[in-house]
Length: 259
Image (cartoon, rainbow, N blue to C red; front, side, top):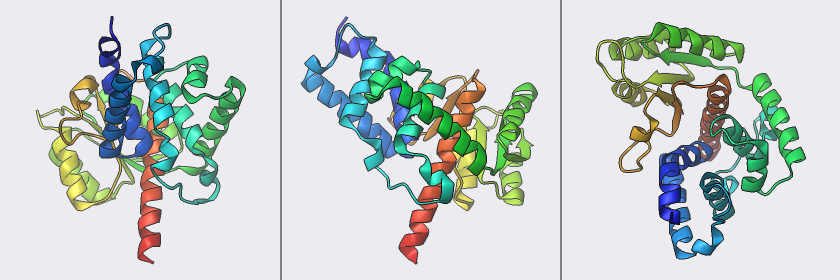
């Protein structure tokens, strides 16, 4: 099997990771494209004896330094959450890599990564409480999401089952984060609901879907943050943390620039 065939199934998930770590679909997709171009230009960089997924993420990190894509804003204790801590958290919790694979991807000692993961989780638990709107029509999944969100110290301001209900609930509660399913109870779209909400307020959004590959093509405007059904609590935890961090940093930077 050639390199192109080996990495093709992994590309949607590298897009997910790149978008999350940069906080931008445009930046994330650009990073993935440039990684592929560099890999095709010099395929000797790719270790065929290593799992294709590990090699793809390793090369991505060798070529792209996500910490150079945005300036971390000084926001109290949460400012101690370094770029590598974020990368480790997403690689472990969202992408499902083992600590040994992460050490290879990030070119870092296992002991350091373990310590940084523990520190990152502690900082997140202590500093990122927010008001969350859940858009989900399946009652069991909605309860599961609420339970996870509340266990992290967040407050769920409401659960909407349809697009119109979600838009009105967002107007009434002004959430700091939206967690949205794609397909809703009355056949309406979670994407349409989010577009209406974003037309009225600036709020980070995480989409939850059973078909992530449909929204990770890089061919049209697509979500920056995406998690897959069924999901583990750690996946939701890490993605919430990154979405809130990036949004707060971007807001801080805009305010500083306007001052």
